[in-house]
Length: 336
Image (cartoon, rainbow, N blue to C red; front, side, top):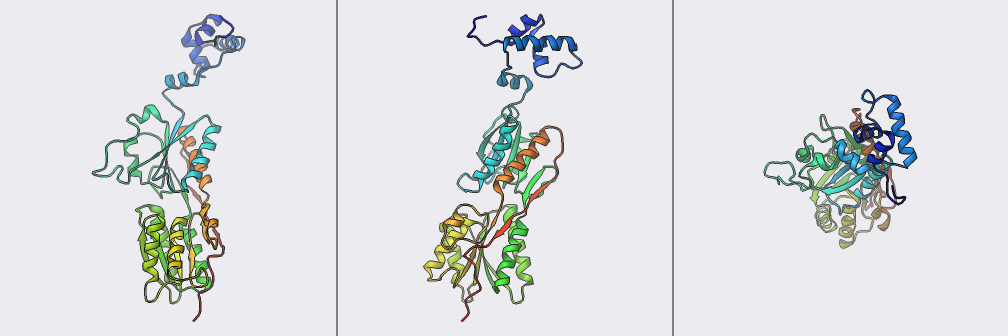
């Protein structure tokens, strides 16, 4: 064999005096009960002498696996999903897996939705799915493919990793109430997702228990321009809110623009809060009071749960708590 050529399983078979199928069984760890220990030792010794290393791609084809995980997200424009990918990829790499990312249309898996998906034969191209901030219906194209839902709420038989978004929203509302706020405006993400429903419900619960508490709500897209319009409508009320509670830091940026367009200073005339604590939160002036969600840890925990599922273990639901980060955008309401 020329010195520059890479040894193959055929070379190992000839060196050990066995068949190529025997080499495949031994090097793939599938020999127990099918090949004698002495033969297995002979194959390993031959492979060591020749410097043979199995071809991972070829082995994966034989085993019917790709060591690839699909991370499904609703959008690639939101800064929140970058850290989710980073966390998932970090754990995946440590276990010899790769992660690919795909967005999914809003009507995926629903009546009238597209029957086309990014993978026409998912069992041939991916081993598992991490679906972030989506409904379980989005997994319809991948029936039978192991999956873990991220930040999507309870989903029956599908394992989940969620943020404690309800507790995070309660922390924001109680912080504002402790400052003396009674008139709350909710600049709500007009997105039909569990995470935003949970935030809205938690906010309503806290305001309901605040003496004299009142809650107004305007929905918007997760977009600065749309959020500015929604916040403007709230601030145009005769009894305008003294605090705007925003479902997302990007929405809070729109609220800042609306406040300044109406001549209101933050936080002297109006308190504003966000949610997620992405980099934008500290780029705003004043810096934004928000809830920090461990997005990278979400990706890491999700990938860990998926690896457990692929290994035959049923992962328990995981809930990652958020943390209230108080900055300069909140203060007691202006008196007078």
